[in-house]
Image (cartoon, rainbow, N blue to C red; front, side, top):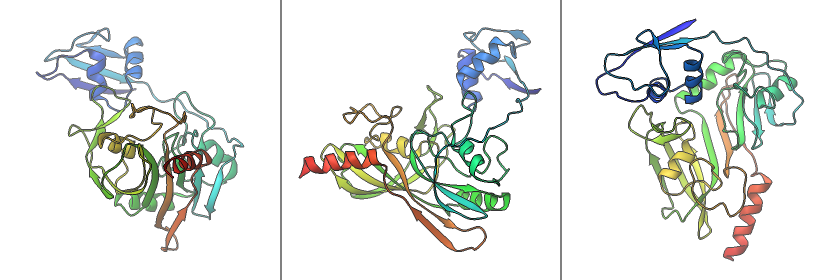
Length: 305
């Protein structure tokens, strides 16, 4: 069993559960509550309630049980394979599909579908995320590259790390974006008050850069093309909410009216380009907007004519 020891400094005077959610940002507050309930967290060698107020000098010991060995089942789920060879595959992921299994959600994912269709997937990310080099949010549609062996995985990961992968998205945002284009350079980290959200912040954050070009204006809405220089969690959604133009349909970062009654954020990974790990040639792929997205744009186009 892994153990983590945390010493409380003089400036901390918060609830135990909230304090730990900040210190252990990879854990949700729900998981921390369960660890406290299961008596796997002690303060000064004593069990405390989640509401206990930590104070200077407290020593917190967190015991983490060994992860259970999981088996991911191949499933015959329809997916659109845009390109495939011995090293990689490019998938046009539908919105509503989770990329890889996670606690409480071990089926119906892209990984389950890949395991059914492909004999080989890279092993670098373990049993839960075989082949997964990068992610798309559940309700973001579009292109994602899959590695079929570890060599391809390592090379694609290096390209991502050093900004060698071209990723272009199309999104519909609220409001009239006044600039024809520009760059949003604002660091992103965990929202300090809601650990399920990301935010533009200087605290425990990483550089995040998004380049955008306005494609069309529809009065109350703007169609924008966005090229990612970095790839932080929820980057486009967070950046445009921070910019004052949240993505239409975003259930987390937009408080704007959802007049189209869409069930997801209108964000689509349209283009993906990289250097092929074996041939060393530049390759680029493009896919169409999903039908729901196209119908909304057609409606808006009729209204402005």
